[in-house]
Length: 355
Image 1 (cartoon, rainbow, N blue to C red):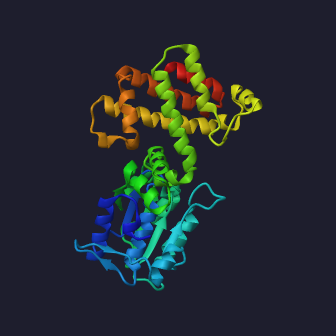
Image 2 (image 1 turned 180 degrees about the horizontal axis):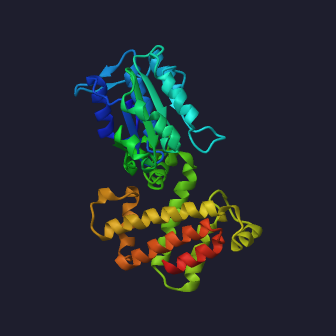
Image 3 (image 1 turned 135 degrees about the horizontal axis):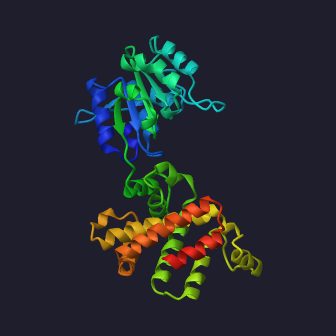
């Protein structure tokens, strides 16, 4: 994967691409940021740019990989001998010291065929204390033609001495518009599904790609409908009737059978499982966040669910600051209750009475 193929992170891509071309790339790097935002992909893009056989130079002093040469292809497939991936063994609780010692010995030799050996330590926060100590000298003064990239979502778990020997690049969550554009443009998502997936991703492209787009789009539609219905009535019976929407199966089509309706009343249907309800509550939290943006008159570009602005603007009139605070708190408490194995039906009924 070349720099140009990575979603977002324009500043970091430009910084790395310029460093590669000018030969000023620090030999030890930490890529720190939330899960699923592209840190590992950036490490492999860096490896391609350093070893590409036909690099592409930009007008602003940047260098990227061609993405098609033999070296780029082998790196993309994980077959290049000079791109080394280090990760915790499945049967271990940490990256053990024997791995660190083997790595120190390996980088003492010249790269096999590439211009530069790139060592990617995935989930580097899983390096044990002894392993971190074993790498200190190598990270401070790596042998020539070796670059270390420590990828982590928890940089605070790396020792201060390790971090002090590396250049730390911080990756921010991706913008919803960036995720939606990539999903629709390169992954065949419809615009609606792409917008819904991006809104519920929390800035993580991996999360946006992970679950079913159809379920996320339906979850957002259900959450919006529940907020609209509860905003228009204080009647307890009417609100409790709305809670059924949070439980109804997202996958079922056509008319429900009597058996299905009975099971939903008991909170036992396939759609009433905790995971499905949690997806809808997360969607509701995203919508409430956008209502807060609208009520504070912040720029509309700050909306996560930008495609729903026309629906959210009239809804925002029902939500002042206090009501928004109560709603946010109720959604958070509901998600916590689901994690503690509370009944989805009880959670849904309680929530609609709090909104």
